[in-house]
Image 1: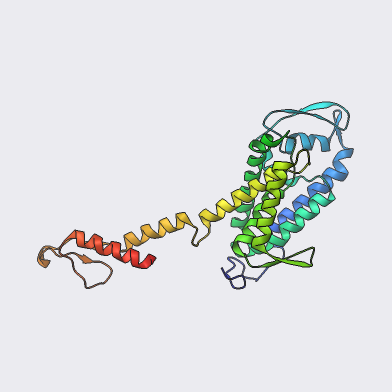
Image 2: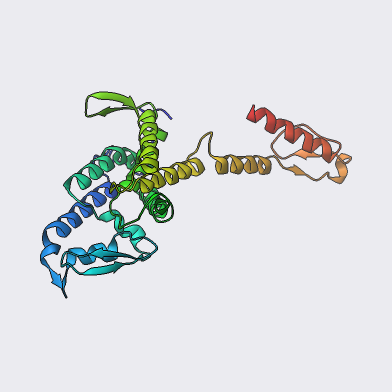
Length: 287
């Protein structure tokens, strides 16, 4: 796809720096971060702070329950709940964590939402986040002890992959100085995540989640983006071509000849000739 010229569905007013979904994600993540960092630690329910309870019930906890020491000193059992595959994406563990996540989300997601439209972008972002959660739940424990996981990084890695997939030759400036094409940046990040996942332990970074979001995002693009790699779209086009080239049965007054319904003047004496010609036409169109 040409990086400069493309159609932006539903964007009558032109390119938006803060399209609806990006705006919602930025505001909601930052607001939740401020509440969990400033207000919730001061609110006590029972013997525990609301911030600890948010982590207990809304962070992504391992399938097997784990014991975690709370701020009060008490040890609580953290269990997995289904809703955590969504809620964990809205929690962050420090200023640096949320700043770089939100900056990357805006930097790469802004253009994707303008291109795809808000609905498709939200679906993609959510699928990548769920894929990251699944990888963290089932793959991460294979490489070391698992703990509560928070952050939108897995979904944002999916966004990064989509940006590199659609704009492979777009230059990204690392530290605002060093240019690198988007496709190479994606490859570099994925390679580093694989290395970190297989060689590091107890780093406090969910490398499996990052890779999970990236892989699920890539698979989504393969099966939904129009283009050479879209297996489902290719299959659909082939079926449409078959239906477009139909033939009428031989009328009695034509001596048993078959004639296509596409306006052609060609006639065939047997249905086998019809199928052979149809096959030949498809091969020529695919060549």
